[in-house]
Amino acid sequence: MHSTRTKTRAAGAIAAGAVLAIAGLASAQSADDFITPKMEAIAKARYGPDAKIIAIHPAESPSAKTISGHFAGSAARGSCPETRIDIFTDPGTPTSVPGFGIGEECAVTLTAPPGDYPIEIVKIGVGWASAGGGGGQSLEDQLRIYAGGIATLGAPQWFVDGPVLTDGANNEFDIVGIGTGSRIINSGAFTISLKMANAQLPGDPAPFHDGDGCQSGAQNLIFGDIGLGLQWFDACLIGLGGDWAMYAVYIPTSCGPANDCDGNGMDDTDEIAMNPSLDCNSNGQLDSCEIEETPGLDMNMNGVIDSCEPPPTCPGDITGNGVVNSADLAELLGLWGPCP
Image (cartoon, rainbow, N blue to C red; front, side, top):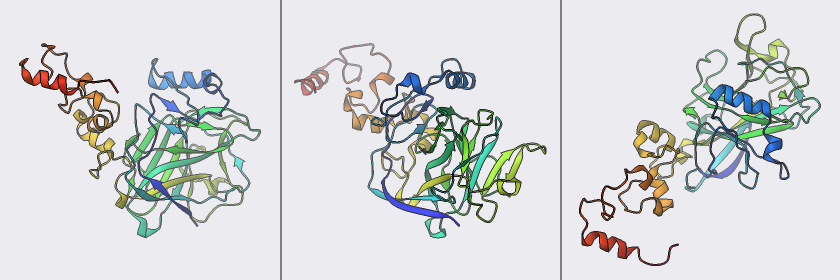
């Protein structure tokens, strides 16, 4: 039986972030305490020697986020119903399950009410804990979304690299505008998963379940090797004693994409993927939206961010028409006055 919780969300309002992985810190915690040498080593091994991890405080980002590359949120375009769906008992009796190997996955299959489809997944939650607590932060491999359930799982239809998980918490990740692939589910069951980057030892932080038995059907999954090679298993048939503490949050696609700063009904990430020239500085934002928000990025008002244009061969040609004339003077006089 699925549990759904509905609230209202301002579509697309997420904070800007950058570089490999971002997670909220405790209010008094320093970045040095948060970013461990092990996390740095994993990041550099997977993403190259220039990979960086940035930590920010909750005041700067209200929820943990993971990213690969740069991203920014679109302007809110009204309100959409936001629904959380899960199968676990909260709080239940949290029971940590260390022992996952590198590349193995913990997953849960969910189904939204039929009348809600098609839906857009906007957040993923993952319960993560150690038996003793205080295990610090863990940088894992990927969050993933699959179409279907255990009988039909193939390649993920969406993924994002570098989720950072906090011991003893339900870690919630806002995934709008980041990752690779599609977060749209048109109908039926879908599966969310956490792919591991670290081999876990007894006592290490790991996924946890609610400890009060499994829901019927193959909804709690493991992708792993129990002596038969890497494959998907119904976790409850191989000894799991409860439902994974994982959840998804979605909005109906009838609201329009959550990441749509220009309001044209298309997800900005998809728009840029189809036409990279729409994002000349490769920061994950449509240039048109950046210019609208910060007009000073396009001083000659030609619709192109100035930093993306080649240096002028004729500095006096403000309008860029190849001639220094009265039009350039008019442009200058039009901008006359105190700087903002």
